[in-house]
Image 1 (cartoon, rainbow, N blue to C red):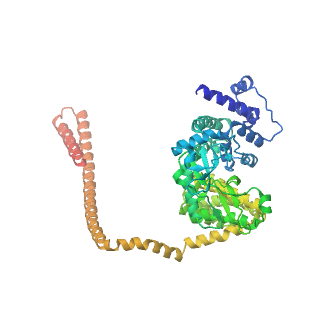
Image 2: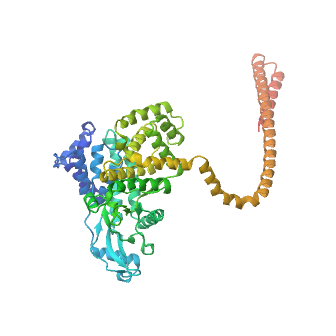
Image 3: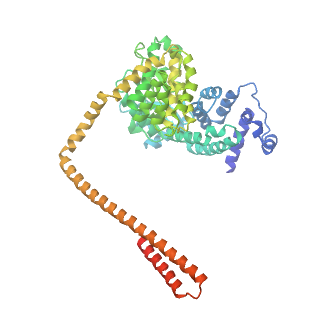
Length: 545
């Protein structure tokens, strides 16, 4: 470790101890050397005894800075790994970071564009509109069309800071299994690796631009969701230019009500947006926390969502979508056998899994959920319970489903904040059933035939030649198979003869040796027997090769 890393590690440990986070480590795991280090080097007391453990962890991460804040935000979505009281506190982490100098942002913009800001933009505001750990946002007006835009700029020199802190986070993650009794189950190194990938992806704003363009295309002319236009000609890895939007933050319920927004319809449309992204488009915004969602001022009785910050997205293949839809329907029909079979059929648990045991485990965990009214059941927690149970049966981690479950929890939380009586199942069930009907049965077969028809029509003139080639290949293959069968028969015959000759040779050698030992005066006869044995072995060896 470099001196800088040692100083940073000391600071991190000091912060953790000042918030009493050593309470997370059982006393039996604290060895004598650790106690000595605690008393002699890290002697600082816990100054926040009145706070709950989850709150102390949140405050410590906020004090450590942006990399740790975002790490805590990501951990808050892994409710399969952390108890609710800690996950709830981590979800409250706010990405509050002081803005960097606007002049530096302007220099970075000019470096990206290759010229002065005034050449492309009017009214560039040197004061940032918003600031976060990775980037900050400035407003301006495009010269070419006079439209109001925002310029998102990556913080200068943030990559070395991220890499340095990530190295330390990896070191701490490797200690977790040694210090915590449940450390191995938490899979700390895997969690850190997922976080690092997400963080590095967020540093490339071209990726975010591409995601926003795709989502905008998917919801073009839709009443459900509006994605601001991206001006890709001005974008680079370190800068994103997109349309400025004006809307009411989804978390400002009072402002929404004051503006006369239809809250019931708004909550239901949030569910529709989510399931449309997942089942129609197979491409969903995976960072739909309240800070990234607004509601348009236009048509409050027919409200439309506005989504920003598309840095994190998820995608599902056809098998994943079918698994989810059938699992939800089977679960709400309380068909736990079907749920267990779906997990096995999808290949997510080993094929030798005992379906009866798996069904019983799912029933034990999920049946108590139905003590609540359907309107109060959480889709996100249904998925969470299924995943936790399946992991006991060696289910492989599915990163795309972890993202989906996190997003679903966000959608549910926002929906019930807007309209507490929201019946998520009533809103989603027709959508799921229609999707399954659309994918299975005669209409799906007819649609598949229509989709393949142009390809088959293009290949139709080639069919005679393909048929002729296949017949020739069949004849060649048949000839090769016949020859292989003959060769195998000859080989077996030779091996049989070789074993026979080896047996005779061994018998002659044993007999010759025995006679020679009993009757030394019979020197010619035993010698002939032994010579015959050697000859048999040589012939047998040559035939076996």
